Length: 356
Image 1 (tube, helix red, strand yellow):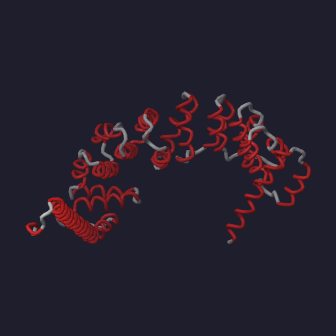
Image 2 (cartoon, one colour; image 1 turned 90 degrees about the vertical axis):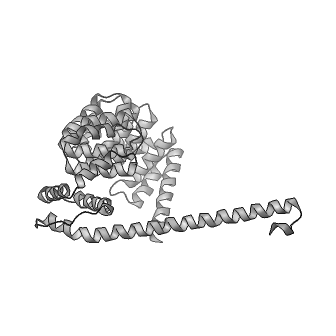
Image 3 (tube, rainbow, N blue to C red; image 1 turned 120 degrees about the vertical axis):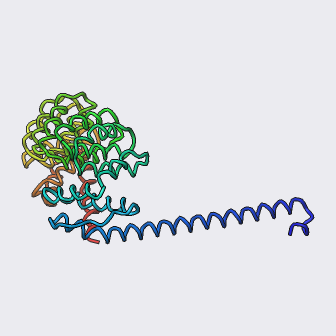
């Protein structure tokens, strides 16, 4: 083919073009092969689920079943299905599936997966070991929890909390505070799944006695973990803390009126971060007696304090548009009037967007 091309540059260009064409064809074939492999894998997964789901449901319900042999290719799909069912089961049904899973080799499979290098395999193995809840796995799960930067560490922590939340809670909090790779919402979800009595004590102690960094890291967990008596903990922090950041985060989470007197006091704090949080808190837990306090905050030197105060005033219960118009006429400070107009304008735009 190239014999008819005399110019060396043309011969080179033709060769490069054919090579590129061949590589493109090879890549296309590889993509098609990967797609076919994925489709076949998905079909095998679906067949395994269809075959084993009715059996697992019968076992959970207490029926005696003789399981078929668990084929090697079905092991991971069945373990995934078993994990999903265990997430929603408690008590005797949960234990029956545990016993059944051990009989068909799922416990041994979970231990093997937990020891593999692939993160997805370890996450799956850790989840299953948490359901089996055997103290024999404690050491290996604790080692996995201290791994930095992978989802497997959180999966291992969750498994430890399932085995014994009271014993694991201190280690989980310590790991969370020493390293920043665990997001607070994920840790909060983990804690929310655990018995409240196992986490409330350690969390409260660390919040009240910890250093500033520890308090700032732990405070969001109160909300995410849905800790019982959260307001009593927040009330104590608002009453006793001298740290503006702690006071700010604590007041932004207040829902009950137990700390109202302290919030009113902190509305005059020297730090605008604290005044802004106090203004927000007054909108949630305050009453009509706090309207004048919010009007004063709307004249604050800090824009954010003014803005939060105006939002709180406008959003107070039983505060109607006519009431706000009357209040505006009584306000002499130009900055307070301007910020009130801005918040009212934003509220009007939001109402129009909802109605559209």
